[in-house]
Amino acid sequence: MGHWTLQDIRWEEFDPAKVDPELLKVVKAASLVERNARDYAAYLCSVFSDDPEVLRTTQQWAAEEVQHGMALGRWAQLADPSFDFEGAFQHFIAEIKLPLDATESVRGSRTGEWVARCVVEVGTSSMYSALAQAAEEPVLKQICQHIAADEFRHYKLFYTHLKRYHAREKLGVLRRLRVAFGRAAETEDDELAYAYYSANHRHDGPYHRRTYVERYARRTFCYYRYRHVERAFAMIFKAVGLRPHGWLNRAVASVVHRLVHWRVRRFTSRELKAAAA
Ligand SMILES: [Fe+2]
Ligand SMILES: [Fe+2]
Image 1 (spheres, helix red, strand yellow):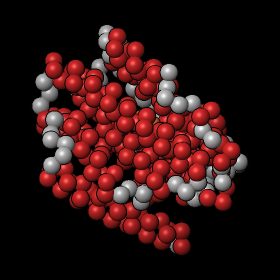
Image 2 (cartoon, rainbow, N blue to C red; image 1 turned 180 degrees about the vertical axis):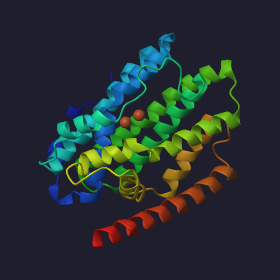
Image 3 (tube, rainbow, N blue to C red; image 1 turned 120 degrees about the vertical axis):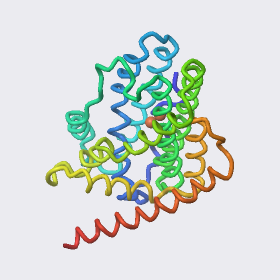
Image 4 (spheres, rainbow, N blue to C red; image 1 turned 30 degrees about the vertical axis):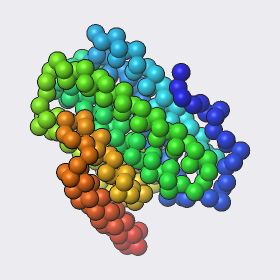
């Protein structure tokens, strides 16, 4: 059983006057990615088909991720009754395909697979923490708080799998770091940008990766505060075998926090210039 259901959300508190139209675009995109979690579960169950513990926990994990998508999608439809959640989702999954027939991890090792899964949960836990804090609309705030709590639990789950496999495979810090960097860099691949396009702009013209990577990124990362970045890097450091709380974490978090906001400003001015042209 999950820790909450859609019935636990106090939908009657929805306040249309407090909907932020920019945040709404991010929520629509996130609803599609979350709803597609069953494909990730199929991939994990295929790669770890001989591990009953992974098979047992992955279905529950996927059910929670799909619920995140359904909660966000329902909220987006309340905020914008013209939002075609089903149509956007079908458009998204027609394009974005996962390696469902893989029987070996695409990360090169099983430990590496869990490092990558931990990085994804770091990304989602920090994002929903930032959105929960930024949201003024009370129902969205509740939803993001529930989701953020799930995402931290998912990290813990994948970290326990990581420890089990690391005990056998002894993957070094550098190799784990390489996987973590590789997975973090994939946030600029098509999946998130295409979800943003499918949810918000699929009727406006053809997809262009760079454009939609930037549009999605600037609307999401503008809500990140230093503490979100610091906690995220503490979790990544722990997953790759570095000391999570120390000067290195604070130094990296400080640089990344500044870099994130520099990029938000850059992407914003580029989008505004393109709109004015
Ligand atoms: Fe999620
Ligand atoms: Fe998650």
